[in-house]
Image 1 (cartoon, rainbow, N blue to C red):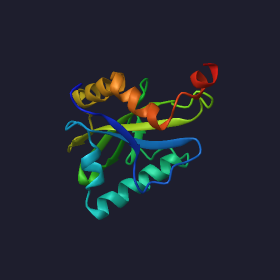
Image 2: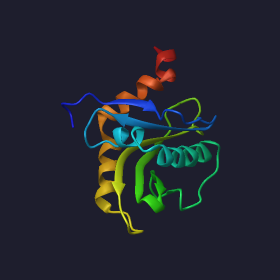
Image 3: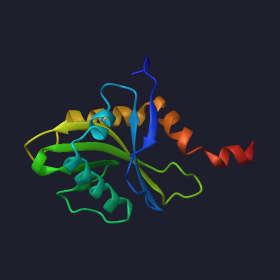
Length: 149
């Protein structure tokens, strides 16, 4: 993963909430950003609506999005089109631990209900990558450390 320049940005054309936001990693062919931003208009509208519902504080319904119990993994999905955008939750604002950022990393097109463990493995790899943390910090700087210096 290291020879690529990884960046982070909020998902375009999605209204972000006060306590929640959805962003995506870019800069590596395994990441889902290119797929997400080039969706056909009807599919893009469906996913934007799901993301805006979530950023406004509405969890679910399961057919649109859900967390994986006991993990920080999350998925936005369009079951009818067999589209899944997987990501993870983090809390990038040290002074506001209640703020949740969903970072999208992985795209899968599938028919079945069960998630492929390999997809979640890719999410975990990006979640643990130092490049991911650095990219997110450019948008959400660690204000507590700056004030202590």
